[in-house]
Amino acid sequence: MSTRIRSFPLLVAALSLAVGAAAVAGLAIGAVRIPPGQVVGILFSGEHTGAFASIVWDVRMPRVILAVVVGAGLAVAGTVLQAVVRNPLADPYLLGASSGASLGAVLVIVLGVGAGTASTVALPVAAFLGSMGALVVVYALARRGGIMTAGRLVLAGVAVQYILAAFTSLVLVLSAKAEHARAIMFWTLGGLGGARWDQLALPAIVLTLGTVLLVALARPLDLLLAGEESAQVLGLDTNRFRAAVFVLTSLVIGVLVAYSGAIGFVGLMVPHVARMITGAGHRRLLPVAALGGAVFLLLADLVARTVAAPQEIPVGVVTALTGGPYFLWLLRRHTRTEGLMA
Amino acid sequence: MTPHPAALTVTGLGHTTADGTSLIRDVDLDAVPGETVGLVGPNGSGKTTLLRCIYGTLRPTAGSISIDGTDSFALTVKERARRVAVVPQDAPGAFGLTVAEVVAMGRSPHKRFWEQDTKDDTRRVTEALTRVGSADLAHRPFEQLSGGERQRALVARALVQEPGLLALDEPTNHLDIRHQLELLSLLRTLPATKLVVLHDLNLAASYCDRLHVLDAGRVVASGPPADVITEELLDSVYGVRARIGTHPTTSAPHIVYIPPETER
Image 1 (cartoon, each protein chain N blue to C red):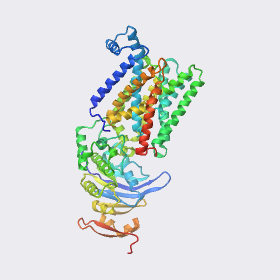
Image 2 (cartoon, each protein chain N blue to C red):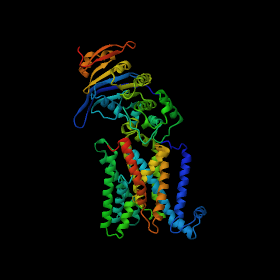
Image 3 (cartoon, chains in turn purple, yellow):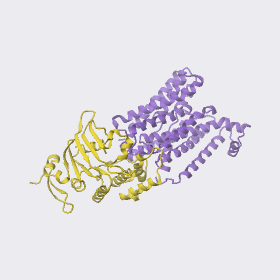
Image 4 (cartoon, each protein chain N blue to C red):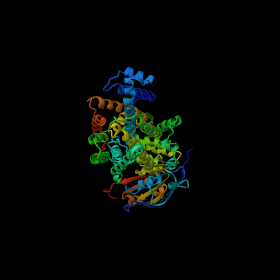
């Protein structure tokens, strides 16, 4: 951890700039290329007329904002899950939470619960419940007998994730809705293409409130790193706190997945890199992870849109191709140094 | 809040596991404020179980524990943490937390969850680390420390917690002899009541005001070391033969063990 950066304000400023730069790139690059200078001009003038301005504001901006929100939220959720299970291999996707949220959302769509405006409420709520259900099941399976190993956690998570994703595909195929393949791809691999101005408020609000609340809970989150028994003798009611954090994290994951599908590995890789830069204390780690997640998903989405243009590939494919190898490296390292798979 | 040594009274304490195994039973034990009380006994005699009940991570199935006259289990987890600090046998490090960060966790029970550490907290952390002779380790990752260094960092964490009662589970376990003696001498100077599990009976006899001897989950002897440490007790509890003399400088009882194969 010798790479630790001491000046926290400087780091946050640098990362914010990186978010800005990645966002400008996201607004500039696409089927129609707009020079970055012109993008910045359009942003600062607030100009809404003209073809370029219309592409920037109406077509690309919602998608860029959704990428920032989802990337930041998944990274925050991953950071917190890793602390709660005291395991660097945790991730909303790998622990089945994202798949649970997808299944919840798909059930609402297929069963037609609360059509029209009611579905804007029913969809995130169902995703939240699905996400929390999956987390509780995985946690219970991994902890049977009171001892939780990394191996058990990952196996339980991956199994639950697969089962839930299979159910999602099954429900979609059996439903009368057209375009099965597309829908299956969206809910199991994620996508930011559906971003719309009128659907950004809820994810943005949930992300902001969730992150602020979790930063406020930095101290007890740190205590969890000391281990179950130590956290208790240092004054933390671990069972109550863990339950509260599960609910809060599921809420964030559920709402994000309701708008972006299940995007994997952002919540695994970003917190880990952030920890190397800023250390494990959550007061600094959470904001850094949030900004890092935003940058990562902005860039991943840019690749997803452009690499096979005019064909668009699911953003989850890009994050998996980057995060998957990283996960394997992490797994290998931890198995060797800490015997975590025992 | 100024720390003051707490009074501990344990009455009729028992713990039976879910499958019916009785780990400790009918344990009576007390410590007056400021005293250093030793808990000794063979492996599996229930020392750690008793200690865990006293610091509250294990719920006894019988009896009561009172700290300064208050029932320990009527306290919230946080209230208890302001009165009782624990030095565990070992603690996992994680995610590269530094020694200073681990020690600073000891301030948690005195703070609201959203409160930041102040300059005063930082000063206490530095002081505590200096007191255990580990000031130079402050910025090292906790999991990279040796067993002995970890142990001293955990003592520092307990110090900044400013407890009335300090519970230690074999604190000398990973330490070389010099650090063992230094740690136990340090313990005696702390403004808290100390309850310490020790394996080394000579150290227990030298550093504790009183001893409680546990055997198969029961207290079989209690009192000042000179009254408790007898050749008969060592034979009946540990099944070892020994001669007991007097330490030439401290006049505490001093045990010399006789290997089983030697003739009497």
